[in-house]
Image (cartoon, rainbow, N blue to C red; front, side, top):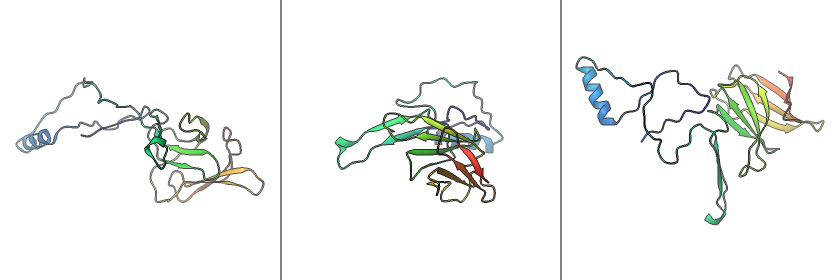
Length: 176
């Protein structure tokens, strides 16, 4: 079973058709024997599988010593496909790269089983590509202000972007 989930803000660049292995073998045989023609309508009718949720997003799980302490919360439409996401080590913030929108969203993760509101946005190109082990370094500067370093967010030559994010709702670029 293949599940193809496209997030709310994603658009397909090429048509995609999923067929069974047997249908694929038959289609390949027809193509080898002189050609095959495949047609699909503007939409394919049918009901989604039980429990299917459109979009991407995030699922939060608690972990504990027993199953009685297990809880989860799902946010399927929180964001479209993420290039990367990283949690701050000094604050309850989650930084999420959204390549399709050219931005890094900042979420408050202080109470993730109940809510994960967007608290800020950094307008900057970002990409899922690259060889970096991390993309975000969130820290407290010598002046007591929170800073966020984005490490080459668009994978364009090890560029560093320093933002003052003391107020995550209003991040300010300080140094590139």
